[in-house]
View 1 (tube, rainbow over the protein chains, first blue to last red):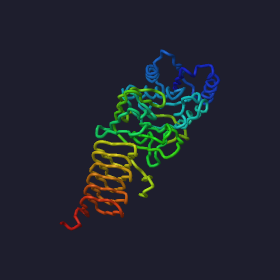
View 2: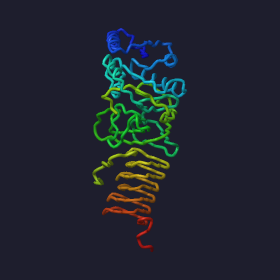
View 3: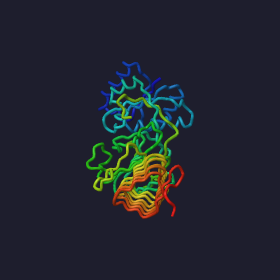
View 4: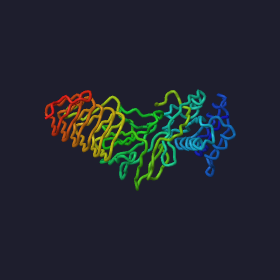
Length: 259
Length: 125
């Protein structure tokens, strides 16, 4: 059974036509399932746990980056507790352009077109980053201003110019150096530091940026002023410990994915 | 690769790149290729290739399988295979390698020891 989790914002009137088209397409493809509409007070974790215990075979997030991150977190936590099937696939139907950059990198098109990707069911097992007790799929970013980075307790990094620090699992809008291969299937995270000539993690930058890349097992970030932002959507206050998670997730992706 | 006016250092696949605006303190040990263009204090060790760019400043003992040196190093260098010292290099320490090339204008203040198959091939003084 498919379980569709609708983000709170998709119930807004401006998305009603889109949601109707999505639901029609789901019906046409024979992918009908249960719909859970998130409310202000509803617990996503509890809802997913209930549905998985009832025998749900696929969990589908209908929303944006933030909802996808929360669904991944819930499934990964339940997997870590060994309370659910470890191979439960997660699907994603991104609704609206806003805050939906991750979908593009997963090869998932917006709105009702995502239903066809769901139907094709290309499942990829992907790594997750773990920041304190929170999982992330793509990357965690923080400004270099006031940031101290300690890697594996063996050495520390001092950043001499302003820029941004990124901990990358699946690069989203990050122009990594050509000789660095980074993707969510390699079992490692990369610390990426971009300074001076670089624009904020944009794919096109002017001049040659100063880039640094480190692979690591464990990393600590301290910054008293600024939080770490994960998956372009959620703020986590520092100090944070970051590592690659033992848990992996099965994500339904499109053929035009970036990895 | 080591043109004076060319800051571009590249290698087909690198595990670590330490950029010009980065200072690393501590024991930096890796398995893959390492490119250093910034500042490192402590020690550097890799079982693969090490490239030290011409603006890099390293105060550390260095160990690698192969290396190209273009920057300033205060410390000893031990390379299992081929060590290439560029014209821009300033080395203040001893070097040990199996194969060695030193470009004109490079600065080397220290002892040089060549080894092959575990045997030292240079004359002992």
